[in-house]
Length: 282
Image (cartoon, rainbow, N blue to C red; front, top):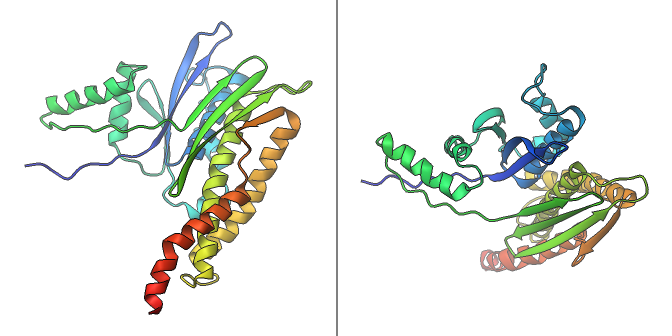
């Protein structure tokens, strides 16, 4: 007799850390509830490795919790109670915050035995459960959402943005500007700013239209979240502007504007909720 299907969803990023000869010294896996947390934790790992070398052999362990707290803003703390992050090294959990599905830990243990072949790791997990007398079938569905390449004098990032109304792709290329050099950390942080900003902008647009249609009231939870989101967008825009001012930055096909995302979300909400409002008014 079959059981209920299990769903374990997460964002996942492999973080290989290379030494001066280009050899991998350590690899960490970061999993998180959303992409911007995933990228920011990866940025902290890359940053501390660049400053002080490998993390796992230090006399004083790296403060993952402090790193996580340093980039978790008030907006995220207040309006995303389901946030979580987990960091793995060689298949072992080295840091966790929040609640994730324990099945993800099993996958990481299997992947440590088959590095570089995540699909095969899923099959290994199936075999592991079968040997335990718990035969299961794992249907694995993955989509690439972020790609980064950083060379000597430039960094290239590609992001796939998914909203209910559309899916778009954009790239940014950053090049050294005078004494300012492109770093992996910078690129990760700015990519996270775009991903978080677009998520917030979409919610703001949805909320604006629901207010206009009278589906929610002023000062409701959604309205308070949107108001906080506007302030957060201001800080994210400042991060992006600082990045653009310190380096030579180009976008392809064009730079995403949070204000445009807000407007698009308003139109999406109008199409979604206006028919419902019309029926309720009859």
